[in-house]
Every structure is written in structure tokens, then in C-alpha cells.
Image (cartoon, rainbow, N blue to C red; front, side, top):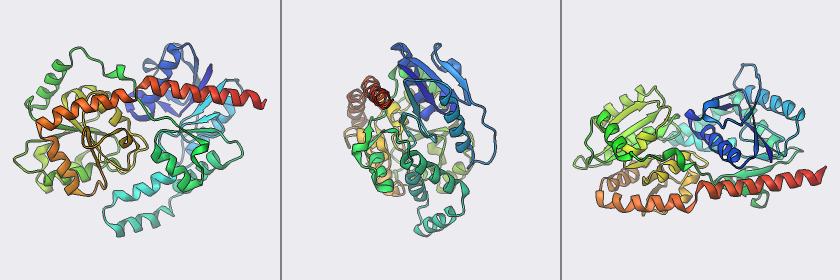
Length: 390
């Protein structure tokens, strides 16, 4: 097939959808598909050599206008070429397949309010959102995507997102295709994994037998770093534990929060890393108390590395877990006691040994190859529908 992928930025080192597009494009190219990328910027070294690039020049400007400009640029560029299947991953419209890996904007807004533990502050945040032009703009764009005249096939990556389509737009499951997210496990292959673990831990100045939880995120607030720090106060002092934080280079406010709560000694702030692979190898489990994730790739990466996972019911990837055998799903990330209890259990080496085996089993139950086959089937369906409409 001749397949066009549309996304504004494809820099796989940034993680998330950009990493996924890299994984997918390499796999498509391996099968001999002709893959085109419509984007403003990309890292060609992280993409297949056979990729065809189409540069879209979108002028910078106000944040709430940029998605519209990119969407129109994609629309214009695709009109000038013929592809078997066109795929949009975010704020674009009219492609044969829309795959909103970031979920629905409306759902994100609703869940974002949960970053405030206080109910009054949530109300204030809801009122303030009415005066945010980006909120109005993105909501309008989303209606154009899913309620407009040109109805694309829509792929969602979790049952949670499928429910959100019904809740916010009245779109039933019969109009959606659920293809759960997956990651390319080849990114985490390493014959010298034990040596990498020891080397990484030495750089952190911690012993090999000290339990270490890993937190990986660029958006610390949405992914629950503050609730995690507060939960550390509920972990008994005689339970040895460290949390390694990888992500945004600016973490001063969270250091200050940890200091004020007396748990700074339990945190290792590592800042940004182009690849967190060695951090996964050095850790014993992942903790991801997110307030909203359609299907978090870091959870899939952790399972691929055999790490048990603590996450929340607001993460579509929680559907891949089988608590408590391979981790825990927290009802409310602001519940410091519940999260603290889960962290305490993960300090038990006997539990971790069993949970590690169960985590690997979960990773093998839904592989990237299964995901890829399901997605290609959707592409074939879209191509057939497109041909029959001509």
C-alpha cells in the first residue's frame, strides 16, 4: 500500500506518538509498503531510509490557531497527491483514518481538572477554561474531525477512549475500531542488560538491591508527579525506596515540594534523556499516577522490560494489567494512602519477583506484531471503502 502519515512533528526521542510513528513507519517499510510523511519537522535518522518526506511550512503564531494551519496545510498537500490510505494522528481532518493517540480534547479537559485535589479549585479551573481561546478552538476543531461531513474511520487505543466518544459525542462503538497501543520491543533489546543496570545505578549512587521506582513524563503535572511525592510520605521509613524521575529538565518546584514534605532523599531527579532505556533497565517498577492517558506508552515500555506497574484508572493502558499480579490500578491519584500502600508493597522483593514474571507475560499477551496486523487490517478496510466510493 501507499500510506501517508500526517503529524506535525516526528522527533521520536520526545516519546509518545512521535516514538510510535517511528516504530510504525519502520514496520510498514519492512513489509514493503510505500510510506510518506507529511510534517513540519522530523528526525530522519530515527525513521526508515525509504521514507518519503513532504515538508509542510506552517507559520508560527498563536497556539490556538496553529492546529488549524497545520490541518489546512495537510488538506492542501494531500489534495495534490494520490495515496491508498491517509492517516491523521492528531488535530487534522478528512484523512481516511484518524488515530487520535492523545484521546479526545474534551475528555482531556475534563480529566485535566483532576490535577487539582481541591473540589473548589476544580470549579475555578472550569470557569477559567471558558476564557481560554485554545479550548474553544480545539473543541471546534474536534467537532469538525468527528462530526463533520467527511467521516473518517476512527481508531482508538483503549476501551476508555471508546467510552469517551460515546460520552462526549454520542458516537457508538460500532463506528470505532479499538486497536490497543503497542511498542516495538526491539527498542529494549540488550544483551548486556545486567551491565547496563549496574552502570546506571552506579551513576545514581545507589546499591543494586535498593528498590527503585521509575517515573517517566514530560508533563509532570498531568502525569501525577506531585501526588506521587505526597504519597511517599505514606511509605514507612523502614521500607527502603527510591524514585527516579525522568522527563522535563525543569523540576525545581517538585524538588521544593519534596523538601517541604521531608521526602527529598527518596527522589533522584534525572531530567531529560533522549532515551530512557537504561533507566528502565535500572528500575524495579514503574509508577505512573496519571490524571489522563488514553493508553500510556511508558506503561507498555515498562511491561516490555519486565517492570510491574502502578498506574490509575484514568489510563487506558491499565486495561492491560491484571492487579495485583503485575501491579496496581489506583482509583484516585490524589489518594496518598492508596498510592503509598501500593509503593510499599513494591518494596517487597518476593512480590516484585512474582510481579516481574507477570509483567513480562502481560507484555507478551499483546505484542507489537498483533497491534500492527490489526492496524494494517484497518488500513485495508479504509482502502477498500475509498475505492468503492469512487
